[in-house]
Amino acid sequence: MNLEQQFWLRAVLQIGGSFLLAYLVHRLSRRLARPLTRLFLDKSRPASPERVGTLNQLLSSFISFLAFFIAALVSLTLFVRVDTLVWVVGLFSAAFGLSVRPMVSDIMTGIGFLFEDSFSVGEKVEILNIEGVIEEINLRSTLLRAPTGELYVIPNGEIRTIRNFSRGRFSTANITLYLAAADLGKAIPLLEEVGVEAVSLLPNLLEPWKVISATGTVGHQAELTLLAKARFGCAAELRPRLLSLVQERLAEKGIQLMN
Image (cartoon, rainbow, N blue to C red):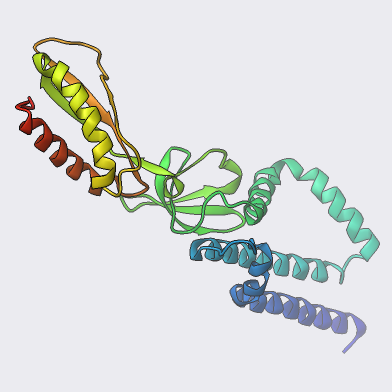
């Protein structure tokens, strides 16, 4: 075997070994990311399982990317000197910077998610006017499952505004009532009084509701809206109880609701 054949054999073995090792690191990336995940968690308060899972996914994605990047550099050192390789990489970055800018933006945004806590796996959000539940977050993209079943793959670099439904302080449980215009004088004070009473009767009601008129018009009937704040995520359960309480109190005073 001559020198050229020995060189190519050694090159094939080194390249194959480098990428095989990178593949093994990729397969073990989730396990390797677990101890690193603790470094990014706030020690002052316990982290939710969703936050831990999100950080683990991002770190495992970063470990996989780094492993294959190093494998590629090790392979290039067989054909290019280290000082020349640095110069070539710099030239390559400058020449192809515009073409790979979206990918770099996606990765840098993904790395930014490591330090932020904007959303986590399992939370319901709205991104780019797409509403759904976060299924996965990696360095390049975020996977969002829509209520109708579609899976949206959103590049991280395009995420600018996030509407997180899972981290609200309260949910709105507004109800609308239609009353005879002649009953307004009796109904408004009664509704305000019942609103104060309802806070003690309904634990999921955070504060007395506010009585407003959304339309501001009066004919033979009037429309009133009760602006009610429920504990976050409890609006659907609270709303029928509010309706029942309001109808009961109005009926006791002889005030009938209209359609």
